[in-house]
Length: 197
Image (cartoon, rainbow, N blue to C red; front, side):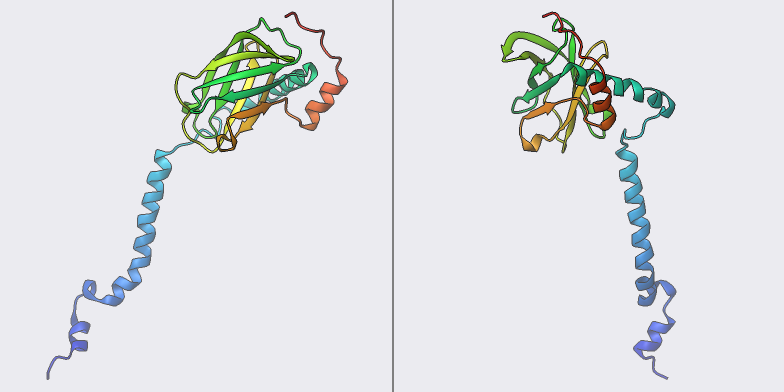
């Protein structure tokens, strides 16, 4: 009896059966995709979750107090970055001691290693009611969709911050957080006396 192509195919070992490979291709693709995803996840660890929840929880009130203090003092700031993001001019208005050291923080949304914290140097220039400071970041900022920009005093009394999107220009206006608790606390407290210039 002559062998037909169908008989030959039926007698072939399992690994030569087309039906086997059609059925197994889906699960094999899923396994490969799982390993690729695992590799990507292990190589791009983010810093979104804090390692010390209790410690951070205790600092929530302290951070809120800094926002309240900035609101009470009427502190606002404007940060102007140069074209490559390696330097900035900072203009600050409000009631604060101009002799106290200040710092500018640029916080990356996911990678703590890319954060920048620099001391602000007073230039001695005034622009209306704003005092001018300069910041040198030493290197251009890495590309990202946005940064969290913060200006604060070194003593940790007040801070102003805002999200900055480089794609929307090189300027960002900073102000105290405008959540209800900050506004309520700031409006119920007396304004501080004018600081020495």
